[in-house]
Structure formats: C-alpha cells, structure tokens
Image 1 (tube, rainbow, N blue to C red):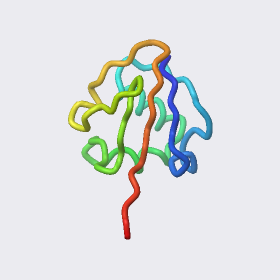
Image 2: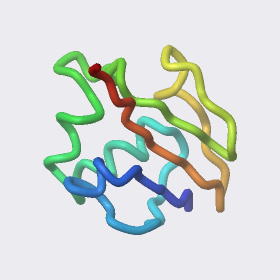
Image 3: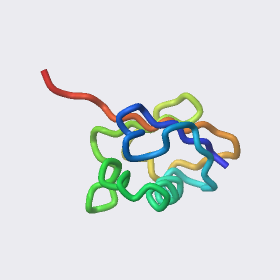
Length: 89
C-alpha cells in the first residue's frame, strides 16, 4: 500500500494525515482517494480525467512529470506527496 500525504490546503477536502491506499498506479491511487474523499476529485483532476496543472505528484521523493503522473507505477510502502501550487501576487 502506498501512503499519501497531502499539503495543508488539500487536507480541507482530503486526508488530514498520512493515509494508506491500495493501488498499483497513481491513477488508481487517486481513484481510491476520490472515492473516500469525493470533494478532492475537483481539486486534482479536470473533466477529461487529466491531472490539473497546479497539482504536483512526488513518489518516493521524486517529482513525477505531469504527463506521466497518472500512469506512474507504485510500489508497496512508497510515500506519495500531493501538492497544490500557489499562485497570485
């Protein structure tokens, strides 16, 4: 099982502490997360089931390129960090 850690802003709609999910890819992980936390879906994915531009995924301490993120394989006990970029001025 991969353990997910979300940034503070995403904790408003998702896991508030590290939480394990059973998934073989980031896509399956996000599906499991959004089943458990339905409000999280709109923050992570667009209506075409693509990762939103302001979301960064880190697996085992390495940022996964956005265009490869959903297909990225997960190993047991890996930590996945989901971050939401901030913008504005």
